[in-house]
Amino acid sequence: MAATQRAPFIVIEGLDRSGKTTQTSNLLVRLQKDGKDVQLIKFPDRTTPIGQMIDSYLRSASELDDRAIHLLFSANRWELASTIEKLLNSGTTVICDRYAFSGIAFSASKVDASGHRLLSYEWCKSPDIGLPKPDIVLFLDITPEKARERGGYGEERYEKEEMQRRVRTNFEGIRKEMMELESKSQDHTLVWEVIDAGRSLEEVEQDIWSHIEPLYRSQCPSLGRLWK
Ligand code: FDM
Image (cartoon, rainbow, N blue to C red; front, side):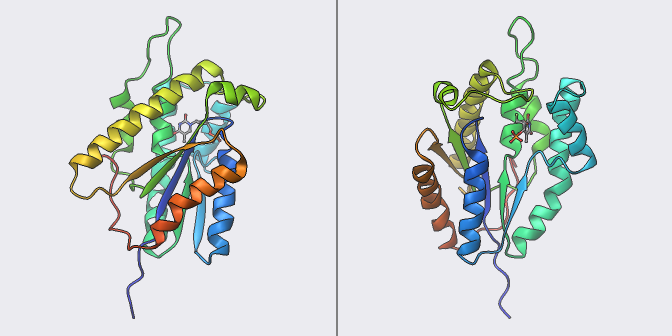
C-alpha cells in the first residue's frame, strides 16, 4: 500500500474588512468540491477554555496583562498543533484562518499612551517558535481607506483604524523577515503571497485559487517548524 502523502498547510491572514472570512469559507468549499479532504481551523479557537478567555478579552468583557493575553493566543495554537500535524500527515489539507503571524502583528502593534511599543517583535515571536510551518501564507491586504469605504471596523478590541495601520505595517515586516529566512534556508518551503483584497470578491477568489491549485501538483515536503 502506498504511503499517504502529506497534505498542504494553508494559512490565510488578513486585515479587518479584507473579506478573510468569506474567502476562507469559499476556498474550503472549492477544495471540497475538488474532492480534497480539508479542515478549516480558526484562530483564535474560541471554543476551548483558553479560547474562551481570549474571546472575553477581545469583547472587552475582561482585562488581561498584554503579555498574558499574547501567551494565551500562542497557547491556543499549541493546543491544536499536534492535531494539525496529524491531519496533514494523514492527507487532510488544513486551512488556518489566522496563525502565528497575527499573533506577532497584533501584539507588537500595542502602544502606550505616548505611542511607544509595549512588546518587542522578538518577544512576540518567541512562544510560537517550533509550531508547524505552513506551505503558503495568503495575506489579504486592504488599505485603511478601502476598509472605511466598506463600512469601517467592528466592535472588538483591535478594530480601530490606528491599530489596523500598525498591524498592516507589522505584517509587511514579518513577510520580509520570512522571505529573507527562506532565501537563506536550504528548503525554501514557505511561500507568502500578498493578495490585493480591495478588488471584487470574484477577483480575489480567483487570485487565491491561482496560488492554491499548484500546491496539489507536486509532493509536499516533510512538515517544517516555524522559525527553526
Ligand atoms: N489576534 C488573533 C491576536 O491579537 N493574536 C492572535 O494570535 C490571533 C490569532 O484577535 F483582532 C486578534 C486579531 C483579531 C482578533 O480575530 C480576532 P478574528 O479573525 O477577527 O476573529
